[in-house]
Length: 110
Image 1 (tube, rainbow, N blue to C red):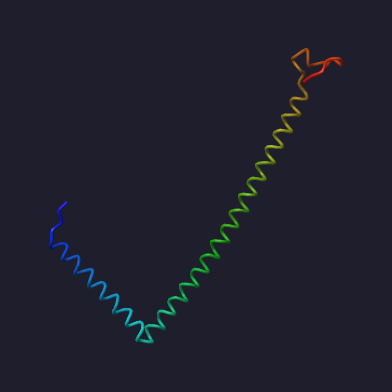
Image 2: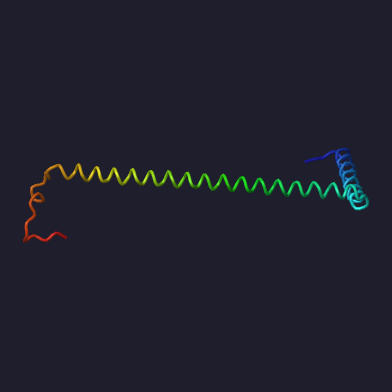
């Protein structure tokens, strides 16, 4: 893989200019109190947004969990009702196997 020397030189110059710009911005923040105060205000606003966002996320998560629990309880109630209905229906039908329709007292089932 061959890379042109001119593109490497160009990228090196861009990287150096970005590094110089970053250093200059750090010096400006350290020297100028107005910039420092603005950075503090931005940090406070960002922290408050994060707090409100996490609070809203927690409230939504609690609501969703409660909804899921409600769905689970409803599903379990339907399963219990279906089993009770099945038991009632099977109780009304006669047994088709003659050996189990009238159990023998001397016979032990294992």
